[in-house]
Length: 284
Image (cartoon, rainbow, N blue to C red; front, side):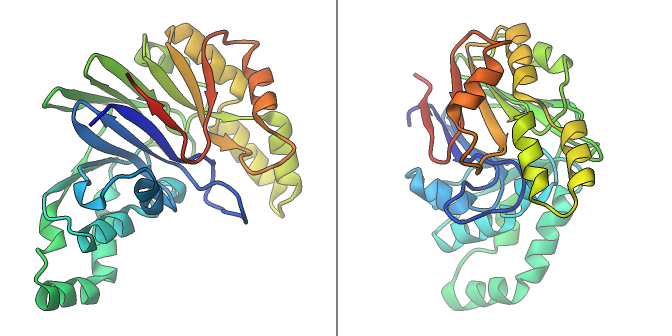
């Protein structure tokens, strides 16, 4: 298995629109592990499109409990189970992620029990281990180490950037966050910093189309990072590459790669990528 990073869903926020991208999720294959980072709507199809057999599902990390990061966690695991998953899966998430899983299992109890009895499947509830984490070391096993940093994403308090190290590489995900300079130290010398990004002009266009414009814009500006500030974090961290992710806006035809590059080039001069659904980056 070659190490790679695949963006499965690249947009910020839970809404989807015709021919638009899907909410946030990524596949990181590193140090012999298959790691799903966040489970926005569409993650299951995204994994299949990335040529991953769902029965090989291994590790899931949830950065926080907003729906565009956790909505399809249960359905992903259940669909993998119906596709032949028979080995344990570990879900690492913030406090409350266990309630999300337990609630899903309760909602699907009839189907789960029927398939156990009628199809001879193992009990899905016994295959899944939930590990709730906080700031600091999260995992260290088999050549893979993972650490978490609490970031600023009001009103959510349990939202964490994640650092994955293995095979001589370091990949860091910012999660959803306002501009947060301590993230630069956390991401120091990362091969790739996957950082959320927002275009201010795009935000104005976005909120103009909604009925809750004032509240939505305040939330976005208080809780997310402008693209230029993502570039500042990457420069301070001296990263190898910056990958803009969780894009706001991601589905406005008036804002494309040129606008993202223009916004970032004032603060970051290194290699730059803009996420899109299905983008695959070979880490070798």
